[in-house]
Length: 155
Ligand SMILES: CC(C)(COP(=O)(O)OP(=O)(O)OC[C@H]1O[C@@H](n2cnc3c(N)ncnc32)[C@H](O)[C@@H]1OP(=O)(O)O)[C@@H](O)C(=O)NCCC(=O)NCCS
Image 1 (cartoon, rainbow, N blue to C red):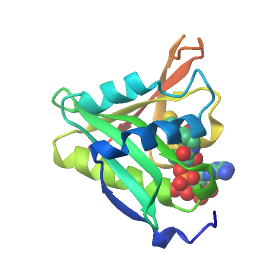
Image 2: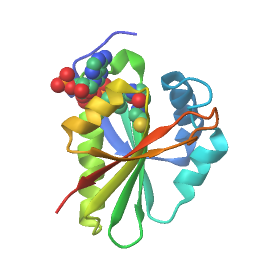
Image 3: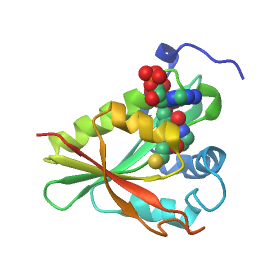
């Protein structure tokens, strides 16, 4: 697989037929115990106000973001994954930007996400986008690992 420039990707709405591909991508991006089992991914998509955006290059799914509205004022980034061969090309930033815009338009003024405490690249990625660590969530993942709860204020 080659690594085309970031501006060659396109982003579209999630379709149910994407589900197995998103699960495969998540397993590719995370170690066992941190990756979402298919049932949890399905639960995320079924949440009230949930949406997912899918990034493609030449018809191949190379990234996605899954998010939902939580309560009246909160938005939740459930997960974002970019295929390892297409990371660091601006794709994650664009997916975050579009998801945040959508959450903001639907009334969210604060955004939340959870990130594995060992995931330095993602923590840095979120900090650059205005998220700050609010809390440590002990034993958050199936393998007993902790997560940081990060928050961004859109107001
Ligand atoms: C976190 C993630 C979504 C970022 O997506 P991306 O397309 O690589 O990110 P972008 O190219 O848009 O943004 C680049 C920023 O991400 C971080 N980053 C991405 N890849 C990096 C790498 N290999 N090394 C260091 N920093 C990196 C940096 O902060 C970088 O900023 P910079 O360009 O100013 O150095 C992607 O790395 C990923 O899918 N990781 C695996 C899954 C994951 O951890 N998801 C988060 C779930 S909580």
